[in-house]
Image (cartoon, rainbow, N blue to C red; front, side, top):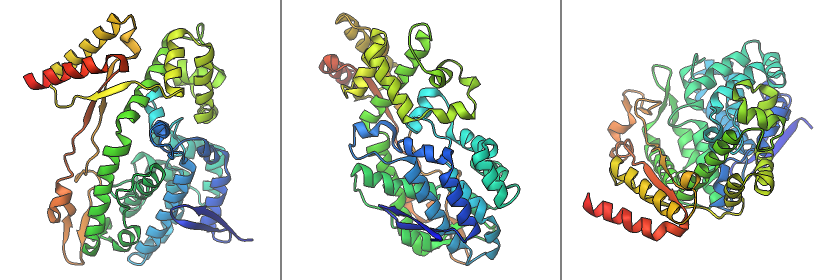
Length: 418
């Protein structure tokens, strides 16, 4: 058979034609070991501890992003046939945009201190299983994709917008997919209407026809709700903080006090020495195994932290964004004193965690409306979008449940006095 089909729960059958050069390239990239590794990277990191259905992988998401990029390109080619020459670059960038994710996706970035965009670009440029496929398609493709993923030189502004903008194919897929897997049905963006509204502005950049305004407004509202209810969920922040403390403590204890295999040892104690092979060796399985090992055989403090996470005996968190910086620090000091009073070490059980807001950025990949006569910024035509520009972040005071009520009373007093 010349076709390969991936049956996606959201998009239906994603069909690839081996006789089509660009799609044959995609098939080869999918079969490459760096991309297959994404099956072992959870899309939503530790969110499965909060939303039990959040088990989908970066592999599944990346296929979805490719699918949407292909649909979008076929739409835009109607306005500019010259975009056809960038098909291979767009397909490769859409498929491989997350190939540089570490264990537990974005949580892994905070745990280990890495940026997936940089690693995605490096893997595309340097890993032979990816670079050779891309260069066989057309010389220069690997470097062009690497530049696109890093936000450097771009082949065409509309191609860049499909990979990185306020309405890129990545966001369109993950909002649908994450809403589906977590069961948070706030409303699904109307993909068909959004894609049909895509057009090319006079400056060759991506734009939206006004007929798609309501669909785009809906998409941006869904994105806002997903950040508030899923991505920045209180327990997600607690789990991420716990994982950060585990890695921090493991690094402090060092190789003489805890066991780590050869690959994890590099990630913990020689991060600057991580090469392509060592990077790809770490995934959710390897990191998870180390958490289990440390829980069973690690030093007491490390074992306790791993046990909390693995057994979902999570810490509590109180929202304190309404307090001033000084009051937040006072609340943290009070929590630490309560923990010490109870004979516990507050170093790895009390902390502040700031959840950054993710609003609409009019000057970073902002969206424009183009009706064939006038090109205008989206927010100037939509009060609703304008209201999403300055979202509210969160600040969580993390603490053991044993001191929760006393700490809650203290925060209430601080709030009443402010």
